Image (tube, rainbow, N blue to C red):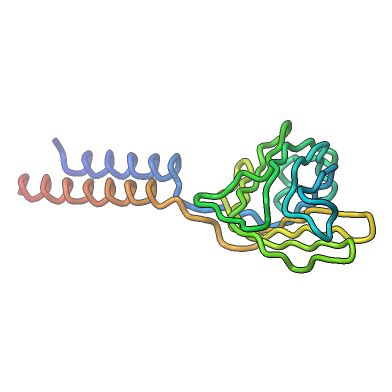
Length: 189
């Protein structure tokens, strides 16, 4: 086989592979607010230990990647109840996800009580945001319940959580191809 044909074939294969299996990360940058009905575990906001039920949640505001993704105000969400008193989880809790429209969700990894008392509650935490056509991205969330109104607020502005498996395999494949080409060229000369 002609060395130039081998080189051309390998180059075309590499370009096609990199185009289809790009390791480039597109992080989520933006904010999303959701609200709905909830019932506390253990009384009102002053004494609550967690959320017994969360229902009727919808997207109430968004910006950045969330707005660009096709999500709409009023998109319904499924939100999971959780405890914030003695919170401990390995692997995260899928806190919410869209029921319709573009796929979006948030996996909860940490909770911190900012304030609690006098009928008010403030929570903060971190987790991973997921949005269709974007890479999973670390984000933060906040819940505030003061004076009868409350909102969950999520934001992502960091670097994506890189999936290194596919990128590593592509690099290994490329290096193997180069080694094979080198071996083939030295045998022909």
